[in-house]
Image (cartoon, rainbow, N blue to C red):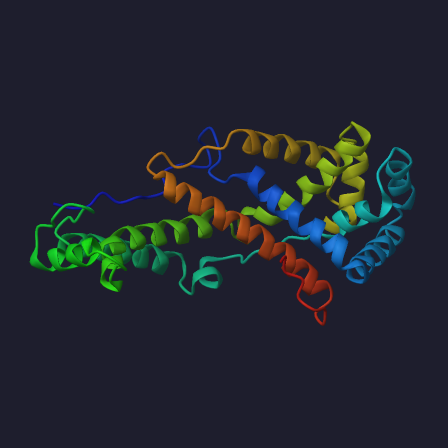
Length: 279
C-alpha cells in the first residue's frame, strides 16, 4: 500500500493559473510602502537613475504626460525603475540540481515520504498506529503536559511531501523563465497609472517600459501582456490535489519570492546599500 503523493497537475494551458498574483502584489505593495516611507535617500537614487534613463531614451515628454494626468512623478519613476527581470533561469541555479536530476530527487523525496508513512504505521493523530515504532510516537504525542519532541515525527511524511511540492512549484512558476517578478513589477506600474488616471494608457506605458525592457517592447506587446496577466490574475486555480494547508504554504512562498526579487532589484542598483527588508 502506498501513500498518495501530492504533485503539480495544473498545466500552463489549462484554465487558471496556480500562482496567487493578487497576494503577491499586496506583499510588494506593503514592501514598497515601507521603502518609500523609511528609505527616501535610496528611493531618490532609484528615481534619479530612472529619470536619467528616461531622458536618454527620449521619453521625458511621455513621462510628463502621465504626471499631468495625475501620476505623482517620484512614485512613477520608482515603479518604472523597479521593472527589471529577476529570478534564476534554470533548475540548477534554483535548486542545485539540473532539470533531470531535480525530477529524480523529487521522486526520491516522495519515496522517502512513503517509507516514513509505512514505518509510522499509517499513523493518524489520536489513533494507534500499525507498528510498535508508531505507537512510541503516538505515546509521545498523547502524553499530558508538554509534548515530547518525538511527536513531530508523526507528521514527517506530510512535511516531506509538502517540501517536494514547494520545490516543484518554485522551479516551475517562480523562476526567471516564468518572468514571475517582471510580470508583478509591470503590474504594479500599470495599476498605479490606472489608479491615478482612470486609464491604462497602453501606448504611453509601453513607451516608458521600453526604457527598461528595450526598444522592441511596444504597445502591441504590452496589450498582449496585460491581457494574459489579467487572465492569470483573475483565474487563480490551485492544484486540485493540494490540501488547504499546502495551498497556503505555496501562497506564502510566492509572496516571499516576490519580496525577495523586489529587494534583489534594489540591492543590484546599489550594492552598498543597507538591506531594507521590511520589518
